[in-house]
Length: 357
Ligand SMILES: [Zn+2]
Image (cartoon, rainbow, N blue to C red; front, side, top):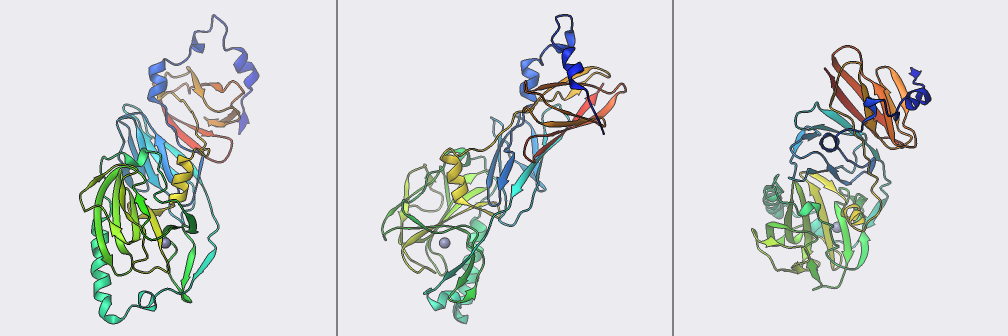
């Protein structure tokens, strides 16, 4: 690939006579704005911003978009990147956002002293467990327009983190499935607070494996589950506000001592509540701002906005975005569709299609 000689191109920009150097009209720039993190970890909840009214799909699913253009999806424990999101703003061609997925370590955790009957249930309770699992599956979150998922989540109980998401677990020497949430050790009876707004989709005081169990739907497929409760303060169908007490810590079901197990899901994908809390605590979630016009005239100058240092590939040529964060390119001479790839510092890529009139 040949490299554009940018100095010459940029020198031509900004002279008063150069009408092509006019910035994009503000409205058009806003229309094309798509913001996602550059990279995410396995188990992450990913929030993105798209122009309101866009069609957005990820992993074969159309994502619900809020009136403000917020979307959310989850990255599984064993997902490998990049995660590809397709965004079609109203009246514009689709573009693909590629988000790098950072792998994590999943150390083995041995859990001993678990009630043997919950590790190796007697045959007479197998039917009960099946029935209860069906009940929980039926209460799993649908795609609802609630927006609790976009709040800054709070930790439902203060206490020592006694179990982390994703660890491979061995119960009384027998391999089990990876840990599906975070465990917080706290005295029996400690109040549990809703981490974000939602609606209770299941409240069962005595399930065989999970004991006192509450499920909350936070909207757009994001849900929380709270296990081993000693007391339930909500019922199925209750609306809950962030911080509202929903029950109390216990050791019911398969538990070795009083603690809260808090799990989170995006539909059937389990995600890590600790990553959701880290985001709420303001740890940096790298964002980006890339503006590319959805269409251009044949042979016209195209102005794009991208983080300095980004690599841009267009029509067989490549260029690096200079410190000013803007770059001008020449549209192909013939009408059609042109592909423009922006690779920002780091590993994520944005792929745009520009209609050439
Ligand atoms: Zn747990």
